[in-house]
Picture 1: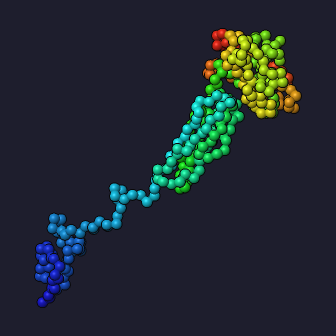
Picture 2: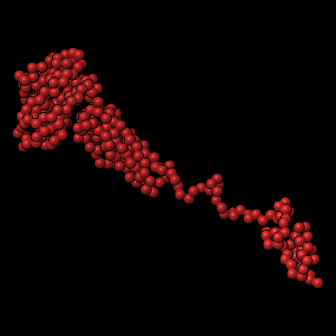
Picture 3: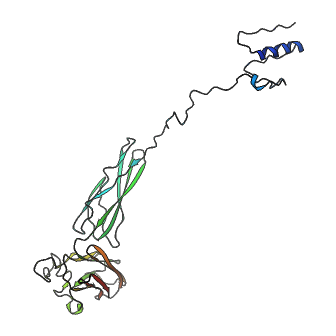
Length: 317
């Protein structure tokens, strides 16, 4: 007779039944313990409700989405942009680009600030000054919109960017600006206080480089009433670049003015051929008229438009 040593561990009723059945069948038998898979090798079918619980306990070290924070901080730096004063008066007022309000919510240090001038009016030669978070002394040279883009980077190499928009608006009621494409071909802007411009060229009825700037050879021209509100002024005279040049009047008389461009000879070699020249006319701070012409005749005078101040209208020539 064979004897079975029953351990002190708990034994289920199902296990005892299987042991008894095995004892009666043969001297060779198997004892199926509670942590085995009943019926797997014996051929005995055991109802599911009688099978022992063999589920694997959850690993206490397993991390779930609810109770475990990621090991890598996913916070990004936040770029904050501004520009002031805004708007500004070209070309005499300057503006400051400011990204000093940028921050990193994760606490990382911001290691670089890079400002770039990503958009500006056609013909503008303005550039973004060097600097860090704050860029002072930016000087727009043309009327229109300037867009500064700031990129910041933190010590983890993560970046963010933002944009600030600067409006450059003439304060003078009449503003005429010119620029060209080929350098160093020298183009000169003329504003004449009559429609009979041919006979008035390079006289005191014509505002141009020789008589219409604070450092002009002949001093400043005097038009209309006493005082300076109706007198023209040439802010910029560019010789070797591509402009811009601008002439403005604070309070024009109700006259008809003529805009003429002179392909000046003598300051450069004057062998540049075709040159695209653009003239913009702003009335009361708004762009009223714009045109581009091809000028190739050295020494030539090319009329662009009449400006009728009585009707605030511009007529192409």
